Image (cartoon, rainbow, N blue to C red; front, side, top):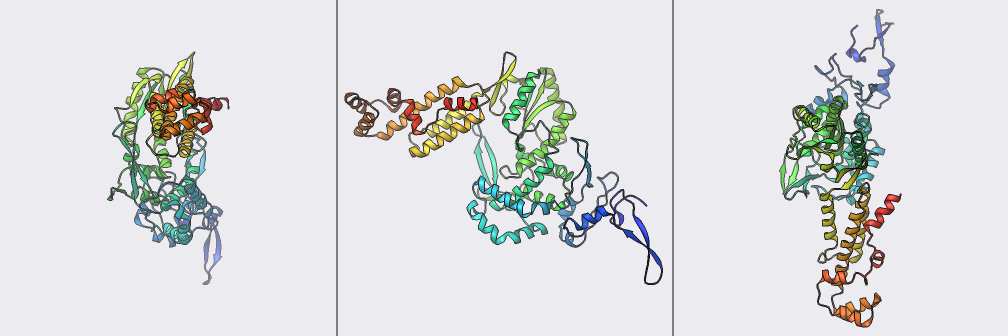
Amino acid sequence: MTCGTKGGLISGQKQSMKPVVTTNGEKSAEVIVPKRLQTLREGLNFRRYKLMNVTESRFKNRQLHIEDYLQMVSAEQKEYAEVFDYRRIAEKSGIITDYWTDNLLDLILRKDNLNRAYKRVKSNKGAGGTDGMQVDELLPYLKENQKTLIQQIRDGRYKPNPVRRVEIPKETKGEYRKLGVPTVVDRVIQQAITQELSSIYEEQFSENSFGFRPNRGAHDALKQCQKNVKDGYVYVVDMDLEKFFDTVCQSKLIEVLSRTIKDGRVISLIHKYLNAGVIANGMFERTEIGMPQGGPLSPLLSNIMLNELDKELERRGHRFVRYADDCMIFCKSRKSAERTLKNILPFIEGKLFLKVNLKKTEVAHVSRVKYLGYTFYRYKGKCRFRVHPKSVEKMKNKLRELTDRNNGMSNQLREEKYQQFVRGWVNYFKLADMKGLLQRTDEWARRRIRAVYWKQWKKIKTKYRMLKALGLEHWKAKELACSRKGYWRMAHVLNQIFSNKIIAKLGYTSFLDYYLVVCEN
């Protein structure tokens, strides 16, 4: 007999026949169900439905035979359920792997997976979405509506809410990054989907991809860049994808997802999130292209989409490093880099339907590019890091905001935020050589802190009392308290009186001191 799924048999398996006597005395043949198919039907705790009929091409004439439960699935879900057969060869390893994703939705809706998703959303906090529900209100809602919510998702009746548009200013003046904030309920569901899909796709992702992946980060990407430069690849194609999240082709993304995910209900649910729409300035906007940047699912979907670019670059033998949509291709000469850019553009724009921003994409020596806030230089044959000037300016702007004399912030809150910022910034830029930079920054920041306290003291008698408490003599304290110099000039005068040790005791962590501690460890 032909190999296929006719009669419920798995492709490539033969039926076993044995004679059976019927009620009228005639002999017929009983089909012995293969053990593997029996396990699929009974052991997965999934409602009965026939396996799809897959042709030799595996891409044409796909048909899903539906019984019982799947009769309730919409036409949209049927379309995405009719995808590739379950036996696939992973491009990365060449090993035959079985992704039993026919019951993927059941795995996503497992109690332990949903609990982990809730805890993750709870820990991340964040603002509420269009329905106004906050994270603190999430647990009572889920306890009351959990069963209904899960059943709606199983039946394909769940409709995600539109996301709330939030615009974040970019480094370039006048430009904004558009974020979409989902409702807290949608964030839990997206997080549950992400947790299950991550384990599947991690095996497919490139070793040169570092963004939004477990146990990988910006420092790993920078170290890989360092290794490439050490090997002589000193010219780079610094590629910028124009408004990547806003311009992703949804149909292409669905196609890529369908190569691995065979549960049509999951594909349909993801598609619903992509098409949920946006509420901007009180008006609803359709989202037929792009995907909202801000939900737990978006980073994973971006990696799945750009993994197609990674595989193409690996196929061509290029050295590259990608962190999210920031990609650098390393070459040994300028001509080679220019040729690489010219040859890769048709694939990105013609196959992935993404647009490259040619104004920001450049071919340059590695010392002239900015990557993840760093810049590179070579010293004694080694590639080393510096903090890019734009990152330095951004850091100073944040310090100006924290040490503003007119922001009305309490001293305790200012000290806490200052300490958090210093530690976070140094931990991120600790790979750079920046002792001199941090020393100058500390001097400037401490002067601003002294100016803040001098203004807070206001009255002459308060200034006199505080100066005396700092150990100043009577006549000198009186002279300075009555001074009519401005805050910035007085901050310089107080340099010796209001010492660095006192400022440190108040809770203002020194950039340089913390940097030296981090480097030692």
